[in-house]
Image 1 (tube, rainbow, N blue to C red):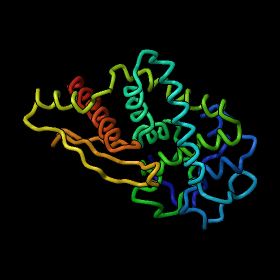
Image 2: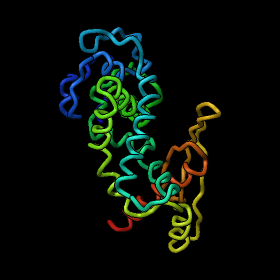
Image 3: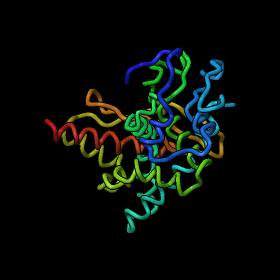
Image 4: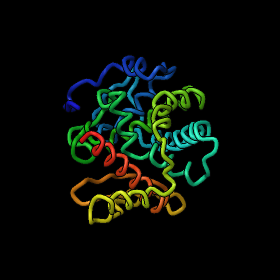
Length: 245
C-alpha cells in the first residue's frame, strides 16, 4: 500500500461508502472509525465536523459485533460442526491477519487519518492499524445502522472466507505436526508475542513457526485457541506453497 503523509487529504468518504455498500446517516461516526489516536491533534475535518475521538471505542464495539456475525455465518455454513471446531474456525476468521486482509481488500488505508509516525512502524500499511480500523468500521456501521447493517457488511467480506474453511481445524496443532514430521525433522514451535486486555477478557497473540519454512500469527481469547488458530493458518499457507511448487 502506498504511504500517505500526514498533510495529504484522505480519500473521499463517499468512495468508501460505495465500496462497502453502506451509506452513513451520520458521517461523524464514520470519521471517528477512520481516525487513529495519533491524528487527534491534527484537527482535521471528517465529513461536516471533526471527530471527537479516535477509533478505539468503535474498535472495541466492532470486535464484539464481528464475533457475533461471524459466529452466525459459521452456524449456517457448518450445521454439523461441534462447538470446539466452530470456535477454532472463528479464531481464524477474526484474527488480526484476516482483519488486515479485509482492510486491504476495502483499501481502508486510503481513508485513514494517521499522523506521521503513528503507532508502530509502517504507518498506513501497518497490519495492526488496518485490523483495528476494520473492527472500528464494523462498529461504526452497527452504531449508525443497527445490527442488520453490520451483519450484512460482515457477510459481504467474510462469507467467502467462511466457505474456504473446508477442513475442520479442531486439532490444527496435531495436523501441523504430522505435516512437519512427514517433510522435515523439525517440530512446530509456538511463541506468545503479546497478552493484553482485562483478566476476564484477555487476548493472546501467538506465533506458530516451522523453522525456515515460515510462520503465522493469530489472536484468540486463550493461549490454546490462539495456538490452534496460528497452526491452522500456518498449515494452510504451507500446503498452499507446496501446491504451487
